[in-house]
Image 1: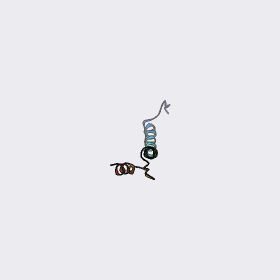
Image 2: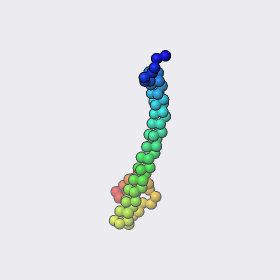
Image 3: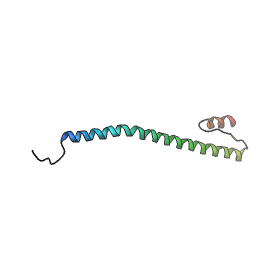
Length: 82
């Protein structure tokens, strides 16, 4: 038999297929966890903005918006000061 000095084409294709299957499984999970992290960060930012808004109303006019988190704080701001 002839001595083999490297990998055959079939062996390289099998390794490439295994890598592609692994990537196809891992990438959606990575993207899902990244989206969840971004959503958590956004919620934290909205809570910080809401707290700052409430503190501003306490300081300026004595009004306070209780328990408003998320996009509703903009609507509440407009309703109270238009």
